[in-house]
Amino acid sequence: EDAWIETGDGEKLHGWQIPAPDPRGNVLFFHGNAGNISHRLDSLAIFNRLGLDVLMVDYRGYGQSSGEPSEAGTYRDARAAWDWLVARGVPPDRIVVFGRSLGGAIGAWLAGQADVSPAGLIVESSFTSGADMARRLYPWLPARLITRLKYPVRDHLAAATSPVLVIHSRDDEIIPFALGRRVYEAARQPKAFHTLRGDHNGGFLLSQPGYQRALAGFLSDQLP
Image 1 (cartoon, helix red, strand yellow):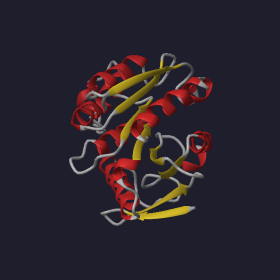
Image 2: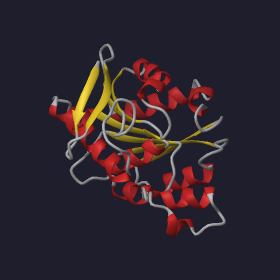
Image 3: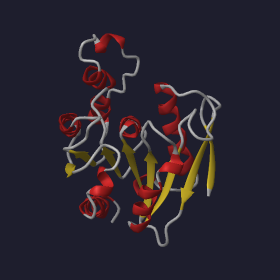
């Protein structure tokens, strides 16, 4: 079902709400930098098998959503999606926030807000900060000075009080495994780490069925 969500600064986001039969809870999914929600059907199928209702949205400037992308804008978009779910009667303790790659940074910000308390937070194939990624991509430049995308994931995770599952592949060619481990180290307890194999975009599929088992175990604890 199409979901149209208005942000606090007047943008209109397009999303999909996908129900599961006899759902155990909800997942609020934030995708990576490339593509849009129509490219996440593999993840939707996994969430459906796990018994989760899903809300995924395109950030401003992505897909059918209005506006232009920005770091502050993605945070506003995440907050609007959360508020939309809660306003429709979904209890916060039945929502798991799930972010992949760039979406992990956005999900970590949301979970770190003082008035947001999801049942759990899953951060998959993400990074510690925009500056760390810039230094990785442009090691010959003063990346910490020139990058305009801060995304201080470690700071947001330190503020988040929900249980956290961090997932990363040793073979990730875009965001090094070492950054995934640092993401895990920044999170509070209780937390868990699951290792994938395969590349940045396809590791979660190549690592089946262990990947889905790891999600199922985390969800069983947070959404009994």
